[in-house]
Length: 94
Image 1 (cartoon, rainbow, N blue to C red):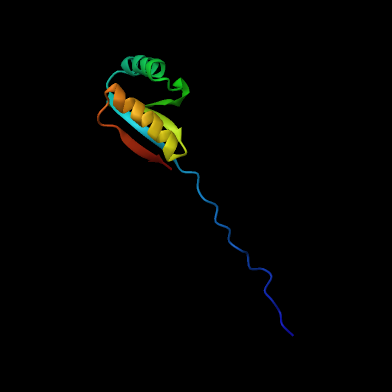
Image 2 (spheres, rainbow, N blue to C red):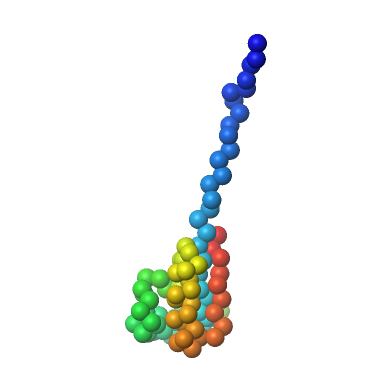
């Protein structure tokens, strides 16, 4: 007679939904960031809802995102590069 342990659970790995953001830059004024956000959305045809503003103690950080694929990052990244932004960072959101 064979007895199987039915209490063993099969582990299922679910891939995490990793998203990315493009860090445009750090600024000192929230007013400047809000104005820049509107200008970039209009001139580069990027949805204004993609812009994210993070406040720190010293700075205001302007980002775009979240992006779920590298193709979507590449489109907005190239638009920002052509507009004149040189030091763009891609940040992995956890």
